[in-house]
Length: 181
Length: 156
Image 1 (cartoon, rainbow over the protein chains, first blue to last red):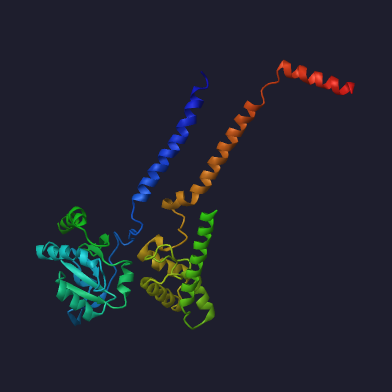
Image 2 (tube, chains in turn blue, red):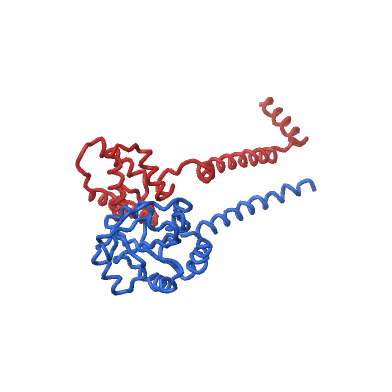
């Protein structure tokens, strides 16, 4: 009779270890290892001043964006998955809910302009990051990436990879509405 | 055995591929000590595109850009710590191959030692319990057997 708790421990301890292990594996393996959380969330968006794709004599800077909620979409004409999110960006631009600015990342401006002419241009304006330096400041490591930046110029959200209909509906647009208040 | 051979073969092939890639990247001419320092730094930084490669090993375009950035910063006289901080500010701790010890990583650093300690305690407990079970108190029959054996030895 005295042995009972000992016997319970015999199977309950391994079972507990097993359950913990399963929990760790479930969470760990369910994650996308390509999604590296950005340290920029909640921090001021890195400053930039770059030539505009369609008006190369004029620049656009992060300071110009103060006071409005905006999206910065990192794209390139060579980027295959940019085509996946492109229709959504076109819809978003047509809805006029939030301005989308493009960062044409490590791209030849001619190729960038041709790509937009062919696929449609959802951007209020695109800027040219020829050598990818601004991309590095924003921690870009895979195109496309999209940043949501608030009125104070603080990065609020980062979408790694193509913007999906779910991400737009469940995360980006609710946040945009909240931040625009 | 065959599986093991295949595994070894694959490792050799991998090592060769890595060596070939490393050889492809020409060191930029300049001060040798600086080159060495940059090379060491690059081997402690992760390429975010091909995540299991260091900046030094990776052929990804982003790795090229980041190597250029590391070199520029080093040439500006920035210390290793400053260069790492520059990259961490942009890409997070993930860019470091050696994650820093802090609140969110204590499990990572302490976990193996905690497991070792836990295992040791468990092993100690089990071996003590086992010892108790395998040496039962000597019964009278044992004592008799020993006495008989003693007598036999003495008689011989």
